[in-house]
Image (cartoon, rainbow, N blue to C red; front, top):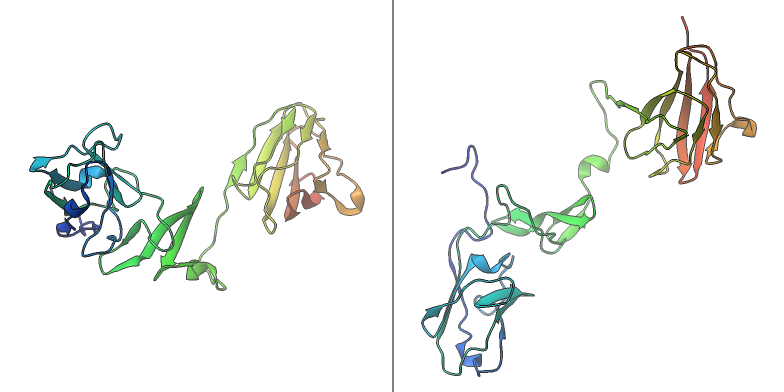
Length: 263
């Protein structure tokens, strides 16, 4: 069944013959370099199911556990038992051995060998740089997106959502969740040091009294206020105060408080 729209690009649009390794069969060696025309194919097949291997006229079972047949490991074909001396060999990398695959996962890749790439430019594409980070590579060199390297001009309003914090005896702001936050206090609370604070992030925290009012806050020393004086909250029922902040360091959150927003 064809894909809707443009077809997926695959690592191997045609079959590739694996170089004959039978000359190295000696009855004891089990691991042999997978080469095509004398060099390792780029990218390498992802798993053994993407290769067809025959030894002594017998098709070998692809088995990534290594229990039987063969598996791929570190650019090598590894047999579960050593082929006998004189046994013949042929091997094929199957066409359509995807790095881009529908409904599956991608290998991590690297700047030199990205996991999502192009048939005519195999060292340009995307890879997993680290946990939660997608890397971009151009001709084998890691890059950052040009969009993020220059001054941006927006022609429409940009919106940062207001994320509701979980009310409790201790309130911890996860800076990775948003820039702007709101919380309705149900009692005397402590604002702990925030998590995932990165220098340069800024935003606002709306602090709302519940229908009872009179709620207070104790601030962790990571939250810093002018003159070292923490704010005295508006205590009326449903009163709204706002703390504007900018992160100067992981434990240095410079804040300005304004209170009792009414009309």
